[in-house]
Image (cartoon, rainbow, N blue to C red; front, side):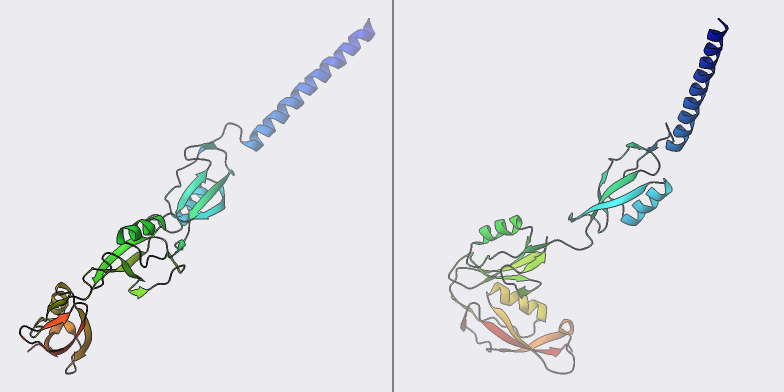
Length: 249
């Protein structure tokens, strides 16, 4: 009988020991993993990368940049997406995965718009991620047909890379086919006024010659033109007229 009491006593001691060991292990594991201690993940979308990095470090969170994308209208290097999502409950030290906006614009291929209609060209530009800029009409028998495509004022060849969202200017035929128009008198006009008169007459500015040391068009007037003005004279639409400027007196 005494033997069984001894065994029972040892079993009881062993059970108490195992219970204490399990309790201590759970206690230290809970402290190690910060059981029950969570942070609310802030919304990082739209923040600059520097601001997001500072905020994550303040909360003892880590980050990994998983992707770089280009989103038009969003600041460069701003946070586009985050994982976990905003307001998620996370523990300190958690890795937050970030997608950031590219510091450089996305590039697209310039399509071939020449000899197509203006409406078709506008549709193709939108589909290519480009925008229609200024449309200039030039005398040509093909009405509303694209005669040239330009980027920053320079002709651009198809399949040339341009920034996404770039403005593309178009030179378009007006269908006149070089009709005769009245020769305008530009004498005494400012340079800007002369440009407007030429445009309304479907003519172009040719050479600009300054008489004197002042080369400021804003403070000069036109004193001569070539071809010279003659009352009742006509000229083909689209032709260029040279102008000679002199300082205002």
